[in-house]
Length: 218
Image (cartoon, rainbow, N blue to C red; front, side):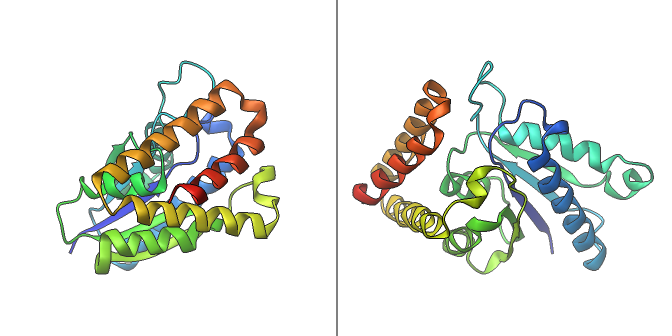
């Protein structure tokens, strides 16, 4: 039996080695993957990093997936760990702009029948689990939430966070109904990214407006 570990990205940091959120996130994920490899006696496994070109500043060419992979390789090569981790297969999915696309695009990298673990930010677990079950079915083993976020977004009103999650899930389920819906879903998320790049200081305003758009759209 083969196992795959999907790691969802959350933005492209200026320097991932110095980014507090990604350090907490990926080191926690690494430990869990390592523990599962030991528990399941896996010599080989697949780690898939998913996340597109969401860089707000800079040249906007770096992707979440590629940045996470760089950091993960560094963790894998620490000391004697490399003897154990060098057989792990790493892949990147570098186009996704939403959670739904994270799932759909990584699914294309699977051979079929692989047991899947998913890692995401803690407040997104319920939504990610429902989408994961919809797309991966019985192959979804577990959705692991990591409470790594140290930004102000983590400390928003729980009611607003729930509203955001529900709107996102509703729109994702709507998008799965047709290719036309899926295309519109991508366009909406691409549009949000363009807005954030144009007005990065208005992050919260753009996010609140986007949630309203999702609610009205489907």
